[in-house]
Image 1: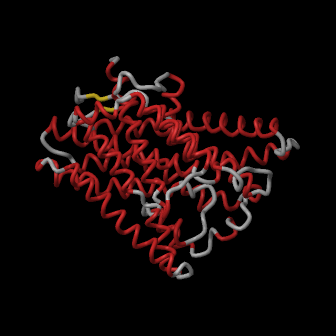
Image 2 (image 1 turned 60 degrees about the horizontal axis):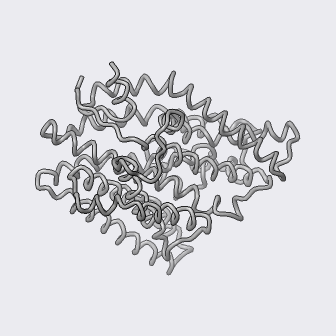
Image 3 (image 1 turned 180 degrees about the horizontal axis):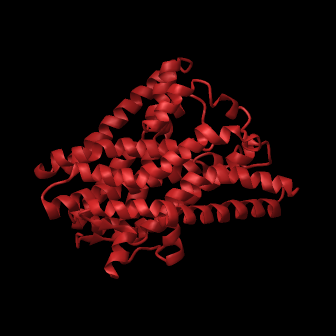
Length: 391
């Protein structure tokens, strides 16, 4: 077992915050789906809130994966692409396929959970749709067909897997030439250029099905946000002291936190859907501070939030179906969702149940795969680094 370990404070807690934002977004969406009073269509919750939770996940993934690849190369002289893929498979695939199988084969047959306008269409174009899900292109299925209830959140997992597919190769190609940041800037430029083309095409022909699909797929691909996270990792890894000193400024941190709160609540967006990039830059700066600045303005490092971040993959993957089940329970108990008490009860049921299910899943299902992936890790990171440092 390698002795090389790296642990960044706060990042598990950030994972939980991102997951919670998505959960709140989908709780209100579930109420909307089933015709209950909701704020999904009338507030920032149904606007940018859940999307920003996803962007935070993307930036964090780009930051961590890039940093760990850079560290592996520095310590071992190379990046093992094979071991990288094995680690990703062991961490992502088991729970992903479990949820996809539920969403495609089991949940559509439970009448109480049928989502009007969506469940009845799950088996239309089923073969190509299933192939997209099983080949880790749920984001393509998300673009071409109607959403598959309770599995639609897997689209972002597909985006990350596609990112993982190319990332170690790209890093390996440029790292010896010390051109990693240049490569990341090139990825961002390429993505944004194609995004501009997609926006222009869609604006000119919004009813063209092929253009619709291309537009929907590309604007949600978001590899530029992951590359922005990668740039943050490079700044920290290569110790760009002058830049870090500027980014560590407490007034800058405070300003960015205020901006996040204000523009999120106001539902502010930049023209032509470049809001994701704006938030990705903000999140990248905040992640650098939370991970490495001893004088960070906010500190989320505590055991409860760290644990919730550790199980955040389960929180993200399970919460949709749990929100629907809890809604049926609340309605059966004749609890009105028109008032504060009813909504607080519903939110408590959903969040508490999701935490319990995700914890059980982590401890008795996911953990065995996480332990297995350590055999293929030259660098032990996150909670595993803390656990092994105590041994």
